[in-house]
Image (cartoon, rainbow over all chains, first blue to last red; front, side, top):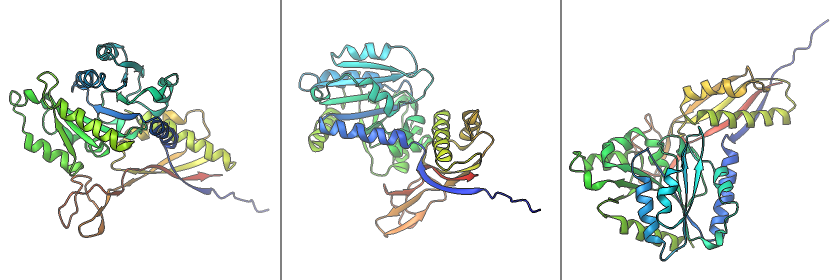
Length: 225
Length: 114
């Protein structure tokens, strides 16, 4: 008696593993677009100055626009408290052990918000230059921050996040000379992964470049809606 | 270390597909992983074993096909597969490009089982 041997079947799938996140991000983007909320996703390593810069941006935008911020951290609400000083609506997302923000966390956080009342939403991602690159949050633009104190070769070490971002900001530019920062090689390392990327140089402490960055955001928002 | 999150998403997608196809067991999963996906292959392999525990996928082999960066150069109007992911430049014209055709995927594309 011959025994029937069951051949393994092969099923073709071709589906993005992060499909669920991508679908949700697309829905969020549509909602933001309809309500005319311009969304900025800010990524960087810890300590590069996201919160300091964002506090300054929120403060300067608030007189003319309705601004809000979501801020992701593994633990503590410290950053939210710092951002609240700007007078903007701020909500902390504590991720526990998760090293990045996902679209679901954004949706949960804005559940009871009236988006119609908002012009700008800033999302300060968890301080990390690797993981946030894979997750679309429905943003209009993704901004990657590097500080002069981190050294000029940081973009070269993290090409994926640079490539996934639309804009780069070089922070703590007032310290460039003190830390022997080589600007030329910084730009080279940016262009390696993202040719022609637009870069802003700022110092929140010494008020350098902040207004140019804000003007750019306002212009981009006008173009978007 | 977001590979554990990715592994859980991968297993969830694989379990759904296995159920839809009435698989009793899964022997292998094939995944396309781009060099610009932001995912570390070794970390994902490690996380995969943890994420599959207690599911129909447990014990299945994870086969990862690494996808190099494929770009389009608008200067010479040609596609190139780059040996190294950076610099993102046309090897002929030496001009940078934003047009990435392949190399960012985290894609489950095959399930083997029965």
